[in-house]
View 1: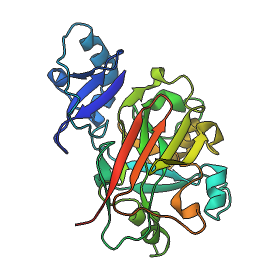
View 2: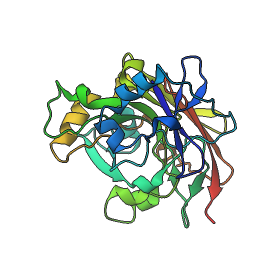
View 3: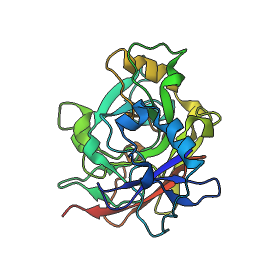
View 4: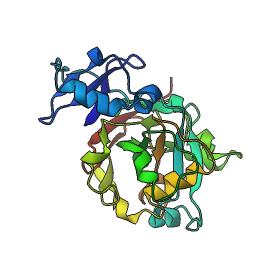
Length: 282
């Protein structure tokens, strides 16, 4: 299945993409794609419900929201592609680099990205996101994939001055509103044959500047999920963003950052595409 959410910001309704690409409204199912939905075997229940229920189509003009409702946490893995670590001037990590992104950064895949107040270093990062399907604590790498519900496209926007030059933790540069567009859909695990062999790319104003494959991940998905479960309980619906390849603005010489009017387009093989236009704050 491919899960979508549509409608006004923070008032989204649940939907699915049909096999022929139609957007279907499943509001009559009565549940949003949140922690309770995933924790109570919602994917299987929804699949069964769809077999016996007709669903109205969603207009093509409807806004798409984040493909999952606001989760308990968005956990990000930094420097997880070797070439990105190099362009950032940092060593390849011996263990996953972990940081958080505020859940209030979550937005739709085609919403405008707002350059924060006083920002001069807003950057982009195309990433594969993993959505957790059931509660995980102290799990092994061998069983980690059993806890994954599916995958989605994520743009981990980052303000590099806030992140790297203002002291403290990276979360400050990662959490502004609109800094976590997620979707256009969440593909369930069975929709993705091999999450470790997906092409991912990002274009700025029509020029491709990130172009890689998830086979270049330093730490793979079972390693990441198992690792995180040793430090926190992962809850159903939690989002784990697995890192970005080379080609971020920070890595250019001189560095290159977003300005108002810039258009960012990105995609992952089998997981759809996003498009954001940069607007100045206020």
